Structures are given as structure tokens and as C-alpha cells.
Amino acid sequence: MNHNGIFSLSFPEAKTIIVSGDIHGNFNQLVFKLCIQYQLTDTLLIVAGDCGFGFEKKEYYEQIVRRNAKRMNQANNWIVFVRGNHDNPAYFDGAMLNFKRFVAVPDYSILQVCNHTILCVGGAISIDRIYRINEWNRNKYHLHSNESQENDISRNLYWQNEVPVYDPNKMNAIPASFLIDTVVTHIPHLHIVNYSPKTTLANGL
Image (cartoon, rainbow, N blue to C red; front, side, top):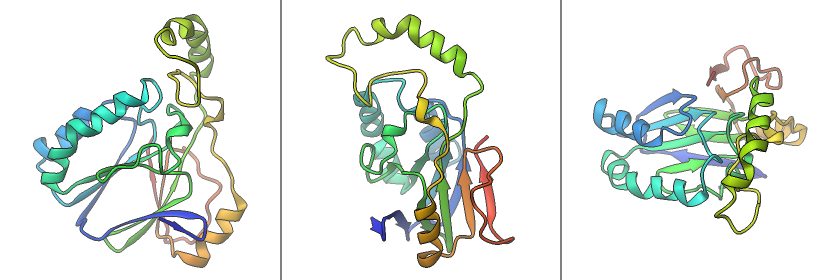
């Protein structure tokens, strides 16, 4: 839901919060570890960036959701994805990938769970961007050979709009509606959030 222009989600049934990061497309393995290996239930798992969205077609990610929906429903677990630098930002608008158990949230999203109010801030700068750009230039025609046209969610290896986005309007609006106690981010050194000394920072790197 949107609260004064801020995307927010509430998880009243969740009893546990886990923060992970840098799964780089290992979605099936993540669900297996969450639901089977560690037998966690009623748990919200937040992936703090470098989820792996954008390297495959959109249908691939939808298939991942369908494949794992039953297991996630039975365990009553949820996974929220925060944008990293190795992710296509187009997936993180709150609508492109928004399912009951899997949601890719926009920057400056708020999660209310387990008596915590969590601010999610996405983006970072790729240290391997030159390699990725060169690799993409070598392979882009082959990768798009079976796609009708290039668009915002066409497969890629690098996204120029990967960087964190400073939004002063949202930064001003959030404290008026939410009391943030935790920040989940992929940014190694977060300089854009300054709420209080009691704010917990969870970093995906």
C-alpha cells in the first residue's frame, strides 16, 4: 500500500525477521534453506540487494514464484527483495514483482513487522561495471535473439541507474508518518539516512 506516497507493507503474522543479501539469483536455494533446511515458519526474510533480477526474462522469475508458492504458503513465510547494484531497478516498483509471498519493493519502502518499522534503501555502485558493460556489448545481440524488442526489463548484465537515489521529499515525508528503528540497505556506507542513534543498520554487503 502507499501511505502519503510511501510504499509500505505490514506483516502482522510474522514472528521472526531475517536479513540476507547477495543471493545472485539463487531463489530456489533460498526458499529451500528457509523452509526445509532450517524449517523456519512465520518468518519474513529480507534480501538486502543483489537479488538477481534482470539477468533472465520476467517469465523466469514468475516461474520461480509459482514453483515455490506452495512451500512458502505451507510455512507461512515471506521474502521481500531490496534493490542492489546487480539488479534491474525496473523490477523494484512495488508492482512488477508483487505476489503474496514474494515482493520486490521500491526504494524508501517501509516494512512493519515484529514491532519494528524498517526502512529499505536500494542501490549501490558496481565495482565490476566495466567488465559487465564490455561483456554485455559482446553478448547483447545473442541474448536478445529470441526477444521481440528491448525494453526496461530485457535481460542485461549492467544497469546505469544502479546508483542509490536521494529523494528529499520521501526523506521528509517518512518521519512524519513512521518512526524508523531499522534500516536495511545494500549501500556499504549509508550517508543519506540520519534518524536517531537508536536506528539499527542492516547492510546486505
